[in-house]
Image (cartoon, rainbow, N blue to C red):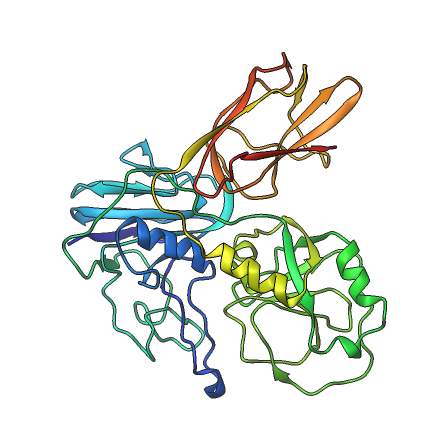
Amino acid sequence: MTAVRVARPGLLTSVQDTGRWGYEHWGVMVGGAQDEWALAWANRLVGNCDDQAAVEMTAIGPELEVLEEGPLALAGAELSAVVDGHAWPSGTARFMEAGARIRFGTRRSGFRAYLAFPGGIDVPAVLGSRSTDWASEIGGLGGRPLAAGDCLRSTTHAATQTSTRWPTMRAGHVLRVMPGVRRDRFPASSYAQLLTREFTVSADSNGIGLRLTGEPIASPRGDWPSEGMAIGSIECPPSGHLLLLMKGRGSLGGYPPLAHVIRADWPVMAQLAPGDWVVFESVDAEEAQTALAEAWQFPAGEPTSKRLAMPYAGWMMDRDRYGRRLPGAGDSVWRGQCVARIASTGQVFDVVASGAGVLERVGPLGQWLGKGETMMTMKGALTNDGGFELRHG
């Protein structure tokens, strides 16, 4: 039976499963893991059902001491985990010896990571869930974040596990939305403004919601009564600065929603960190349903490697069109992310990942490569036959 003791708790570390659904008419928030997709992957890596309780870590992970040996799985954000000084990449399961120390360092990508135990974490269920709700002080360990000295144990002794690394984070900067149920209260220009501007996640954000800074959106006039508010709603207060509601939001809200982030992109929303940029893209109901079905089609078997050859002789650039650092070897990438730029014959091309994966090798940035030389390889569970797409920059 795997067991660990918390030596240092990290920034905001708690026990979470998929949340308390069905009690919002009592004022009980859904809560639970912000990134259900990464939680599901962590559980699958140790042979659990997708909804078992695991440890959710936010930005700065804890330091843990293994009390009883057994497997653990890590998924989601890359928080530079090490076990007794040896790197432990996200998207893998590992057998832990008693006495081992698990530490986390610099956040490399994403914002939330998950640590799964065989059979889930052994804590009492409250209203059908083991998730920690610190506002109501229920679930997890006493309804609070983990503290130094806390001990966590698995519910079973045996578990299957895989040593293969999988991409387990659906990060990105584009959130797909549908028009809000109260869009009629807004000026006609508001929705177009939402879709044509770039926003930044404010440091004044939490698990209840993300505050977005940027050019204000034209807000509705007048006072409106509070009403039920869905996860993913984009509220627009009189200031015009948007509020994006997360899983920790209350069941009611007072600002009308301009749009709603589709369910398929909740995991993307959960991995946004303060300072990240975000843009919105409009879809219809059919596209939203298709995206949700595709998002939860977990692949079977081993992830395959895709090689990208230099299509033209030219330079590999080290920054994207916005001046941001491009991902390097060992980084997780997501579908639609720019992973390389090529300058060749007076033209610039963006290389975009056509599926989620982990970069294994990246060619020499800032150097000349001949046509046909290897730019990079990516191991991914969700790549199509091409793995990469080439677009004019």
